[in-house]
Image (tube, rainbow, N blue to C red; front, side, top):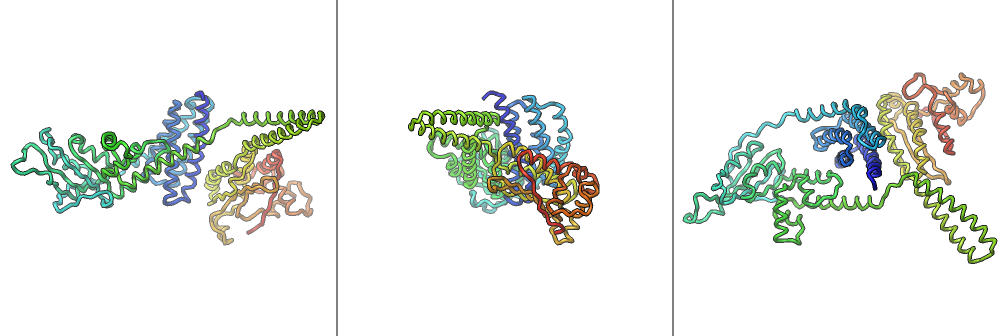
Length: 571
């Protein structure tokens, strides 16, 4: 694969990731709990992957913009920012801008056009205001230095750790005093970014009085420590004695849960177990290096996770979560390896060749019959069957699920409902129904007209719906299914239905129908497909000009399809 081919592969992947981001953002309103957290993680991973892949191709303008988006999403993921309606709209707009950047990169086969990139500057400024607001949030006041509790503070492990306190087990090396270090200074330093809630001095290493060396350190400490800092920051307090002390830092139970969530949210990149644990913060680089040394020298066959748990460095549940993440990544990569992207032109060429093959086979059949050679006729029959199978398989390659097209209407419904001031949701079914790729590409515009029309004309205002005993939120439905060799696509709504009298009056006014002529419901409904026909009282961005429904019928007819309308008024 050359660089241009690789770039096109990135562009295709980026568009898929942007679709994922958009769908997950639009679904946040209905998601809660673990489902909401997973959606936010999915949005973050999509932005992270786009940024990382763009960097490989030197697409610096995509990297720069997506980095700011990713930073905001990181704050959302860590619950430093909440996604309200304003931020949701901003992130959707950012997705649109990234899509424009990707389109530009495809057009120039390189870094997007500078003018297009500058169009994102206002979005960047709005994003940075969220980041600045987070940075300006008042930091927690430094905890006062607590009086050291000398009551017994039992040694604890992960299972016994409480929900608030870190547990620091510290044993200084004997030469720490000779090296000019004051052990108590390290403990006092902890109080600059947290609060010691309990401490016990370990003196089990003291020798007999006659064997004591005044310049040697024999003490250790068990410390209960409350802080908002992470494990790496706590370890850094002992940076100058790390190689000359035994240090174990056990997180509180609340941190263990956070580590597990962070592991779940990591990008789907292959990584070793130790790398995953370091990236989520439960393990420091120094601890990993020490464990790898133990593995190399004493237990080369022992898994690194087993060693870390045995040392008490990492909680078993966190190691299990990391192993599960590894397995998920491997399975995802294995699934990806079973799928390849094929240029549509190549598929068209294959189908053309299969057509030529069928014609050639028909000619061979004529010759086989003229020879009256039974063996030749039998061989040709086998060949014909194989050609038919090849044709069916080739045509099947062009079939795609309509779910991808349906999913894009979440954004249409979201944007239009805001524009017209109605609360409207989208219900989708039949997403697995397959159509030819060309049909799927061309059906999008007619469906857009129908959905927008249903929202503007069909769904009533909230007060009207309430008077009719309906929920305030309206619903537009999309459904697809196979029926007698055809594909049926339904667009429906739970609105007030078409007003037949109004349609007929407008048709008479425009001279489309003679006054007094009796028409069936189907004939009346069919009038809305006349060019320039509209019953809207006001011209808006969505309706009133009579352009749309005639285009729908024309496009569907061009696809050798038909349009039928069923409506019940006033329900």
